Length: 219
Image (cartoon, rainbow, N blue to C red; front, side, top):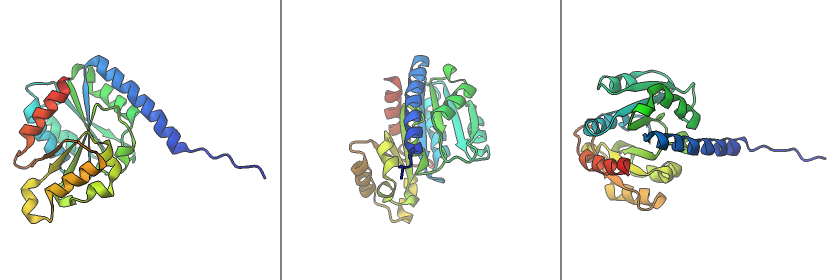
């Protein structure tokens, strides 16, 4: 009996996307646009953290934000109210953005006229980590209520991260959360990665993080 030919579609898809992501990075480099991909679970505080970051960077850089969701435009409206260019990307049911979807969004927002573009990826600790968006920096947000064991349960997300914000530290007393343990768990997956404890509610920790981020953007 003849062997059935098996096509590993996912591996092929990921490989094609990775090549396209590399092309997109070169395109953005030529335009001198820095692209930041923000990933986290729903409710971790991506949009509220973005508001803190925008308030500290808007005087230094021309900023834009792309909001990705399966549906709705709530987050895009929130950012637009700050006077920052913002567009909503509906993924058509997909739980992530890939390089081509990023490119479409970047064209729509006019990235050539912006210094920094943020992508608030779909809230999910699995799918977004698998697909390279063409970003220069992957920022992962983990919130205190989620627990300090998440880097162990979702390893790929933290392996792909370039920096991690641990948000909602103002709620530390309410939850059984160990900051040293979460940092150890993150570094178990990604040795040496910067980890910044922050509170999007109070602004604590964002001065330090944004100082670090400004240096990365200006490289």
